[in-house]
Image 1 (cartoon, rainbow, N blue to C red):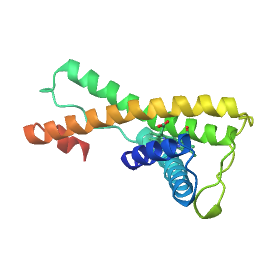
Image 2 (tube, protein in one colour):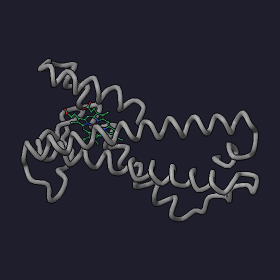
Image 3 (cartoon, rainbow, N blue to C red):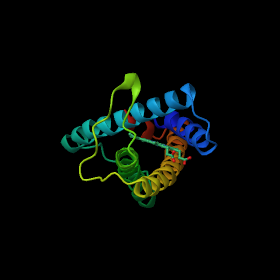
Image 4 (tube, rainbow, N blue to C red):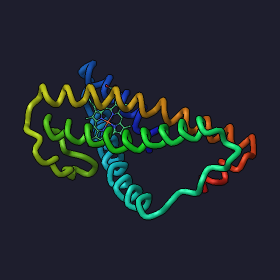
Length: 159
Ligand code: HEM
């Protein structure tokens, strides 16, 4: 979902910047908001599951430094998977532009005032952190593939 949200987000923001409005731009925004908000809801479920389950221990063969790096990477991905959609939601609440697929509105985020300057700032941080998230995800996917080819048991641990 995130890998879909990135190109949609960049294209729609560029169209808005170039003042290209119309059905395609609206559709891209509507899908971006709907998929992005779904990521937020899925993260609530995911964190709920994660808190009830313990992940299997890393094999002793994995150096301690790599275990710490892996944990730091995973925690950062979790934080950003919550923060990035929250910032997007806060931005559309401040703008306000809550309309999404099928003409349905997202709920407004509580305590966020309608303020176009605030919306611009929130969208700026949203876009930057989304790029950081993408870099971390690419690193994560790359590391997962490396372990798959090495057959060191780490890839199977993910399942
Ligand atoms: C994991 C979830 C999300 C990711 C990875 C993501 C990613 C992105 C990216 C890469 C951009 C383009 C930034 C730019 O080029 O300036 C963007 C823009 C945008 N996103 Fe998201 N997004 C997510 C969730 C959301 C959510 C939940 C909403 C609202 C409900 C949202 C609303 C927006 C809006 C309105 C823009 C355009 C901002 C502008 O026009 O400057 N996003 N997003």
